[in-house]
Length: 129
Image 1 (cartoon, rainbow, N blue to C red):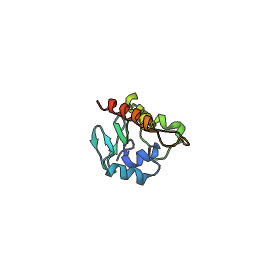
Image 2: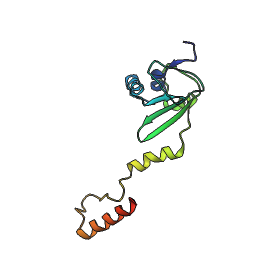
Image 3: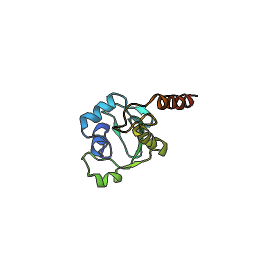
Image 4: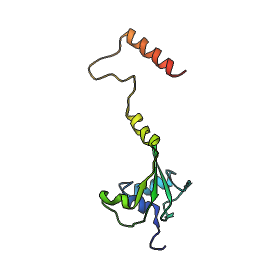
Protein backbone atom coordinates (compact mmCIF):
# COMPACT_ATOMS: atom_id res chain seq x y z
CA UNK A 1 0.00 0.00 0.00
CA UNK A 2 1.49 3.34 -1.04
CA UNK A 3 1.29 6.56 0.95
CA UNK A 4 -1.81 7.80 -0.87
CA UNK A 5 -3.86 4.61 -0.41
CA UNK A 6 -5.75 3.68 2.77
CA UNK A 7 -8.36 1.11 3.78
CA UNK A 8 -11.87 2.42 3.17
CA UNK A 9 -13.08 1.66 6.70
CA UNK A 10 -10.16 3.54 8.23
CA UNK A 11 -10.65 6.47 5.84
CA UNK A 12 -14.38 6.76 6.58
CA UNK A 13 -13.57 6.87 10.29
CA UNK A 14 -10.69 9.36 9.77
CA UNK A 15 -12.88 11.88 7.90
CA UNK A 16 -15.65 11.53 10.51
CA UNK A 17 -18.32 9.93 8.35
CA UNK A 18 -18.61 7.23 11.03
CA UNK A 19 -18.06 7.49 14.77
CA UNK A 20 -15.94 4.33 15.07
CA UNK A 21 -13.93 2.24 12.67
CA UNK A 22 -15.95 -0.86 13.56
CA UNK A 23 -19.17 0.90 12.55
CA UNK A 24 -17.52 1.89 9.26
CA UNK A 25 -16.41 -1.72 8.71
CA UNK A 26 -19.92 -3.01 9.38
CA UNK A 27 -21.34 -0.48 6.89
CA UNK A 28 -18.96 -1.81 4.24
CA UNK A 29 -19.87 -5.43 4.98
CA UNK A 30 -23.59 -4.67 4.82
CA UNK A 31 -23.29 -3.05 1.37
CA UNK A 32 -23.86 0.58 2.40
CA UNK A 33 -20.55 1.80 0.98
CA UNK A 34 -19.64 1.83 -2.70
CA UNK A 35 -16.66 3.32 -4.50
CA UNK A 36 -17.15 4.29 -8.15
CA UNK A 37 -20.53 2.45 -8.06
CA UNK A 38 -18.99 -0.83 -6.84
CA UNK A 39 -19.82 -2.18 -3.37
CA UNK A 40 -16.62 -2.64 -1.41
CA UNK A 41 -15.32 -4.62 1.55
CA UNK A 42 -13.65 -2.90 4.51
CA UNK A 43 -10.20 -3.87 3.20
CA UNK A 44 -10.63 -1.99 -0.11
CA UNK A 45 -7.92 0.63 -0.58
CA UNK A 46 -9.30 4.02 -1.51
CA UNK A 47 -7.24 6.43 -3.62
CA UNK A 48 -7.32 10.11 -4.41
CA UNK A 49 -9.99 11.11 -6.94
CA UNK A 50 -12.39 8.23 -6.25
CA UNK A 51 -16.10 8.78 -5.63
CA UNK A 52 -17.52 7.28 -2.41
CA UNK A 53 -21.26 6.73 -1.96
CA UNK A 54 -22.49 6.30 1.63
CA UNK A 55 -26.04 5.03 2.17
CA UNK A 56 -27.45 6.46 5.41
CA UNK A 57 -31.11 6.05 4.67
CA UNK A 58 -33.09 7.86 3.42
CA UNK A 59 -30.15 9.80 1.93
CA UNK A 60 -27.33 8.53 -0.27
CA UNK A 61 -24.36 10.83 0.31
CA UNK A 62 -21.69 11.22 -2.37
CA UNK A 63 -18.12 12.33 -1.65
CA UNK A 64 -15.01 12.84 -3.75
CA UNK A 65 -11.68 11.88 -2.16
CA UNK A 66 -9.31 14.86 -2.39
CA UNK A 67 -6.50 13.26 -0.41
CA UNK A 68 -6.22 10.33 1.99
CA UNK A 69 -5.29 10.19 5.66
CA UNK A 70 -4.88 7.41 8.20
CA UNK A 71 -5.30 9.67 11.23
CA UNK A 72 -8.62 11.02 12.46
CA UNK A 73 -8.86 14.70 11.56
CA UNK A 74 -10.66 17.54 13.27
CA UNK A 75 -14.07 18.54 11.90
CA UNK A 76 -12.64 21.89 10.76
CA UNK A 77 -10.25 20.32 8.24
CA UNK A 78 -12.39 17.46 6.92
CA UNK A 79 -13.06 19.56 3.80
CA UNK A 80 -9.36 19.26 2.91
CA UNK A 81 -9.77 15.48 2.53
CA UNK A 82 -13.26 14.99 1.02
CA UNK A 83 -15.66 17.13 -0.99
CA UNK A 84 -19.40 16.65 -0.59
CA UNK A 85 -20.93 16.31 -4.06
CA UNK A 86 -24.31 15.03 -2.87
CA UNK A 87 -27.16 16.41 -5.05
CA UNK A 88 -29.59 18.77 -3.32
CA UNK A 89 -32.51 16.39 -4.00
CA UNK A 90 -30.81 13.76 -1.84
CA UNK A 91 -30.20 16.23 1.00
CA UNK A 92 -33.86 17.27 0.86
CA UNK A 93 -34.93 13.65 1.49
CA UNK A 94 -33.63 13.94 5.04
CA UNK A 95 -35.83 16.98 5.66
CA UNK A 96 -38.86 15.23 4.19
CA UNK A 97 -38.32 12.19 6.43
CA UNK A 98 -38.38 14.43 9.52
CA UNK A 99 -41.63 16.13 8.46
CA UNK A 100 -44.51 14.24 10.10
CA UNK A 101 -46.95 15.29 7.37
CA UNK A 102 -50.67 15.96 7.55
CA UNK A 103 -51.49 13.26 10.12
CA UNK A 104 -49.53 14.98 12.87
CA UNK A 105 -51.47 16.49 15.79
CA UNK A 106 -49.83 18.62 18.47
CA UNK A 107 -49.76 17.20 21.98
CA UNK A 108 -52.88 18.01 23.96
CA UNK A 109 -55.26 18.23 20.99
CA UNK A 110 -56.64 14.72 21.53
CA UNK A 111 -58.11 12.43 18.93
CA UNK A 112 -59.61 13.90 15.74
CA UNK A 113 -63.37 14.28 15.62
CA UNK A 114 -65.40 12.31 13.10
CA UNK A 115 -65.57 15.34 10.80
CA UNK A 116 -61.78 15.92 11.06
CA UNK A 117 -61.11 12.24 10.38
CA UNK A 118 -63.24 12.33 7.21
CA UNK A 119 -61.32 15.40 6.04
CA UNK A 120 -58.01 13.61 6.68
CA UNK A 121 -59.22 10.50 4.83
CA UNK A 122 -60.32 12.57 1.81
CA UNK A 123 -56.94 14.33 1.76
CA UNK A 124 -55.04 11.03 1.92
CA UNK A 125 -57.22 9.49 -0.80
CA UNK A 126 -56.42 12.42 -3.10
CA UNK A 127 -52.68 11.91 -2.49
CA UNK A 128 -52.80 8.28 -3.57
CA UNK A 129 -54.37 9.10 -6.96
